[in-house]
Each structure stands twice: as C-alpha cells, then as structure tokens.
Image (cartoon, rainbow, N blue to C red; front, top):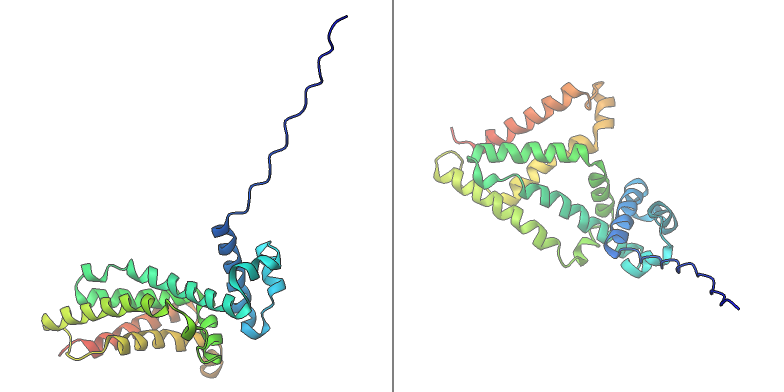
Length: 221
C-alpha cells in the first residue's frame, strides 16, 4: 500500500517588523509641529497628533512623556533645524561682508519658508520660555552660531571693514528681529499701510532694506 505523503504546510507568515523607533519619533514630531503651530500649546490635542502621525496615542506618551515635554521636543528640533542650516552657510570661508549678507538673506528666506518656526516661538513666548529653560541642549545649539558670527566680526574689524565692539548676540537679534517683526505682523501692517507686504516685489525690497541697515551699521565710513 503506497505511503501517503503528508500535506505540505504553507510557510508561516512572517512576523510584522517592529516599527522603527527613529522613524516613529520623527513622524510624531512632524505631526506635533503642525499641531502646535496651528493651535498653540493650549489648543493642541494629543489625539489629533496621534491621528496625524498614524500612531497610537500611548506611543506618544511612551516616547515623549506628556504634551508639555512633546512641545519642548518640537522646539528643540525646530532650533536644531535652523542652526544646522546656518552652519552650512560657510561664513568663515568668505569675506566678512559677504558672510553677513549670507546670514541676513538666510534668516529672511528661512522664516519665509518655515512660518511654523515663528508661530512656535510666539507660542513659547506666551509661556515665558518655560520649556526652553528646561532644555538641556538649547544653549549648546546656539553657541556655535554666536562663535561663528563673532569670528566674522573680528575678521572684519581686523581688516578695517567693520566697527569695533559689536556684540554678536545683539547683532543676531537685530537681524532676526528685522525679519521676525515684519513677517509676524505682515497682515496688520499690510492693512494699516494699504500695501501687500508679502508681494514678491515687497519681499525683495525688504531683504534689500534689511541688508542695507545692518551693513550701514557695521561697515566703517
């Protein structure tokens, strides 16, 4: 009597691969950035962030603790983003005037391209920077920028181009403020002065004006 062959079993289905932790955290931070930029810290909802990210809400708490800690993580990543781009300006490799021009243009264009950065800062200022004050890494993120700008100013002074005694922190705040105030108040200013301050021509004029102001202060007569 012929031996009956045992039926072939289908190979077991592969177990689902665990979700990559870095990717999950990145998706959560992307979703949280959009949520906090749209609604602020007070109006943001973890349920909506989880839905945007396509994750379970418990995973957000697992990685980031609570909504306040998640907001701090979003702020830290926002600063990492702009500081990383600033390092790529290679300001130490060009003459001092060109370095300052690059920084002004970069700051202006970055704010235009990343309006969420400004809204996140607005929200954090409402809370008196209490989240950034708890950040262990925020100071170290900003110190390379200050050092880089200080080096440019020193080179310019030694070459007889720039005035002496310029505080790099004050200078950076002035550059950021010239762009930040304009963009943060563009709607009210456009209404008050009956001009479209976000028109292409107006934005080009604003960058030129900012550059002239800063270099007019820095460059010796």
